[in-house]
Image (cartoon, rainbow, N blue to C red; front, side):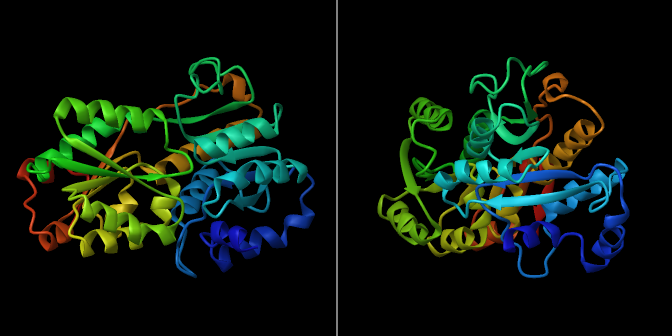
Length: 332
């Protein structure tokens, strides 16, 4: 119940009233969309969920009303990635019409749970290489959605780090112990760091409770800055991570703008809010008769650079003027 409320709080009580009142009167098909994600949003009680807002607004723009044309079932793993297969199977048993997994791990779980249900994934790097599609242009199966360029963005994040913290010779990478070991992201990091002549420290955590120990390890090894590898749990725990980074005087770099809005230093990556809006467009097309096999997988074309000048001032760092000009978002 809490996970469902977390997604639907974006509507507000007033918005729910009219559609649900007429729900029983509807004779047409009411689609059931199953959302599967590693973690729920950490929105405070009563706060709108920005991802849900984007999804619902895009569905409304397509003429699809919540409670009238579709309902949503949400299942979150609370950071325990091993729960995702069971949760995916649970959604299938609930007879959802479309699965919408968020993250590559959730997408793999959804793929194993059903070979026939339409699946619209969000944030999967290299879906062809992972065996989720025959090609980006024509996926050919029951999966389509939005690919991720995260591993390819790491060089850009390191470039930003070097421009802001030029004296850093050792960089820590904060990783999720459940999924990062041996991934393309880690391999990319090691190769780039070797070329730059920089020392790499990978600090892995399995839960938020391990974050203080992780930052203590970064400080002990004299890391000059850290990059948090893209992971839903690091977005969920963004406030704690920002506080620990300031406490340990560590410049912080992220893939998600939400981390910078919470007090991180710099982010460069895909806009998650926009990804949810794009996913809604896919879901709407499938509801109107399109097949996932025929819907090309989209790759991100726009990347968001966010800089928190308050955090830079607290760390006594100077942000190059050219970066401030290029930034999509500057928090003063």
